[in-house]
Length: 273
Image (cartoon, rainbow, N blue to C red):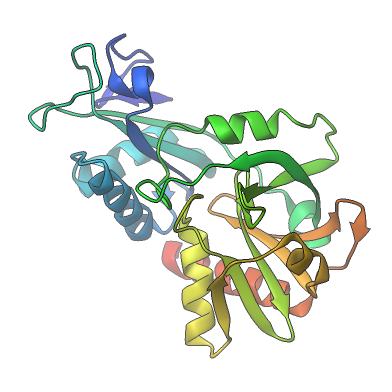
């Protein structure tokens, strides 16, 4: 089901700035029995990203009601919320007086149990992410780098591609954030020059702090990834995926990855109980 500005339709204006310029932000996350999982965090991230672009975000209760509407009776849904600057005149300049366009969609979600239990195969992408500190961390609508990176492979056995920046430092997957574990400590790449600061990344960093586990937000090279004891990928829809095949390097899911998986699942179950 699709709602556009609260109405059941699947069209936006041809002059919408989200279509013309990627001028907007979005969130993708699960809902269980109509209830959005980690809704306060998802909405807060949406609002923070929108603030960077000086976008006005609909009230949380409005969006939550629409999420429940599009999910209907589905036991598990993948929800996507898009907020654009709305329709505007030709040209890049925008005015603060304009209204936004909001789009809320849902599709049935099936949990990939095999990926969570056994891990996934990933590859290193050739595409390099450009630096743009003004937009770093923001999940804005211009995702062409990710589109081109995902086009680099068609092998269905490969679940994800890892992206580096123009200096060769590892940043993230095309749809995930990445963590490594070394000697019972975690590390994840900085995303202050490019990349998306995902909600689940934020949750893992906070969980580590609560449990007294060291977690560095730092620059990571490809050698750091290859030399890690464990590598895992996170996002809101999939939780934590262990990496079992890293560009042909075979590894086993480790205890730190299993701890993160368990912590995320328990927190989500408690939140939706």
